[in-house]
Picture 1 (tube, rainbow, N blue to C red):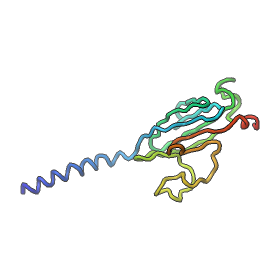
Picture 2: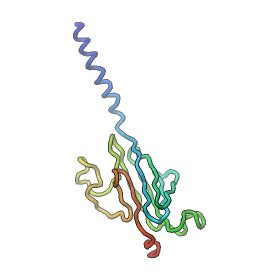
Picture 3: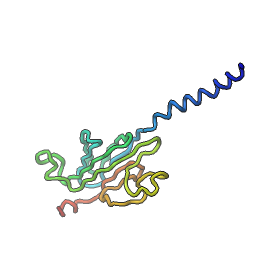
Picture 4: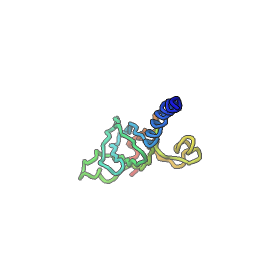
Length: 152
């Protein structure tokens, strides 16, 4: 009878630890928004306060669970004329992201390999001039030139 309880004690501890950690399936990842353009990039995460990414710089963001990221690029310095970005954004996009366990990525493309790889491996719609999930899964890069401002 004593041996049975000893075996139960050794097996119970790992099982309890596994059960306690199973509820924490979401994850937090630090990723970056890069601005490799002459535009002023303004972003907001989950409808929260906006942040500014000046030309040639980047900003770290925390991705947690499923969420959204709104990005807009302005030709003039944001707030230069009246605080509205001088007449509207030259480029803008709204992205959805997922952060689960050890994976954080922007959701784009088809669901073909969704269960195996996550969304974003077979592009469906162009989101130019933005590039997502590069250089790391979950990163966003704005790359364009000033010609986009002349065409407006």
